[in-house]
Figure 1 (tube, rainbow, N blue to C red):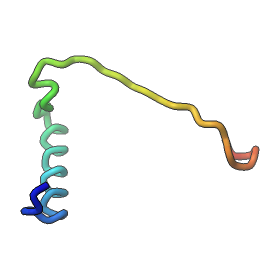
Figure 2 (cartoon, one colour; figure 1 turned 120 degrees about the vertical axis):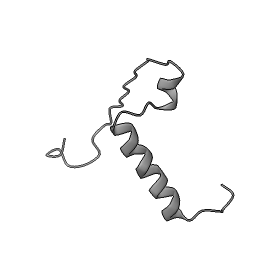
Figure 3 (cartoon, rainbow, N blue to C red; figure 1 turned 135 degrees about the vertical axis):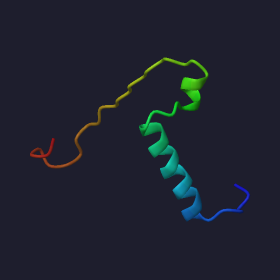
Figure 4 (cartoon, rainbow, N blue to C red; figure 1 turned 45 degrees about the vertical axis):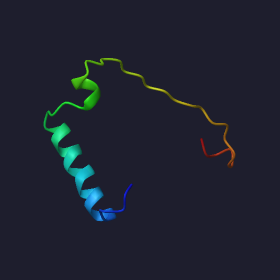
Length: 53
């Protein structure tokens, strides 16, 4: 946000965090004790040919 890091540096940080969480590090929500899980979805009307679902 301050412009002190390059896009690559921030991307590397995000990737490293994903790897650490994949290896068992808790997310901030887990550290705070949140256990909710929400899966949302939205249906869309087809706007293409009838053969495409």
